Length: 331
Image 1 (spheres, rainbow, N blue to C red):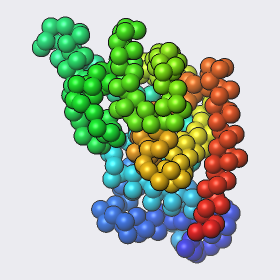
Image 2: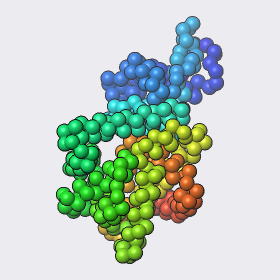
Image 3: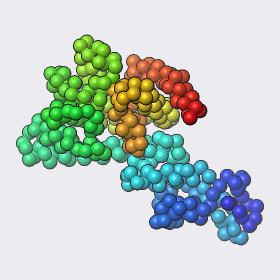
Image 4: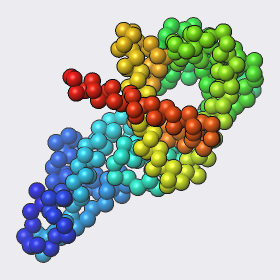
């Protein structure tokens, strides 16, 4: 790998892989990949730019750092789940590959704006048909509640169609910054809990009679930090320092919570024992970064949330990940 006719090579040739070698490697995964394909991906910043790694005779030989190889492999896998260049950019950056933060940030804003635009178009179309905002929201909630795995909300527990639709409507109103009354929020709270499996959280079961006010406050708080409008604004204003922090700490946070959920299920001998199985469903979902990146930044900008986040991270790093590593060593 990286053999050339003369010594005009900057650095060790063992640090690079040629474009021809990259193409050959990619075709072992997907025969349709060509040099033009790689060129397109580099132009879209999905792969690092090509650099001159030496000469063959008098002709320059182009290639990339060897770190581009695992990035190419991951890109080929991710393309099976989405064809959105912007989603792919955010995912590769989130997972620590060679993508500049500014490109990931721009892509994140575009994805969130597209999501907002699509829901607004659907909402406007239904409002024109039914004649009122309220009925349009209810129709969208019914459609959203009826979507199956991969396209809609999870189905972790048995729930009546009516309750699922009430929960879906409340989630939509909160996520898209639509009006929801205190009475509607109070009615929807237990239905949302059941929809997401949160009613199985031990602390919620133990204090169900006293926790409704706290939970309503939490839902109202989510509307402040997690609505699509807020997430777009946060993504646009994210600093390089915030992006670097969320790239590292966010992956640890999400991975630690999922690991804790699995460990809890293992110890309890049943699924969703901690009420967090809903997160496991998104563990291998590439687009999870689209929501997590701006949501975590938004949360960390609130002093009270930042302190809680730091405490959870400390627990994950010292306890959960340590137990996981020990189990891996034993296995």
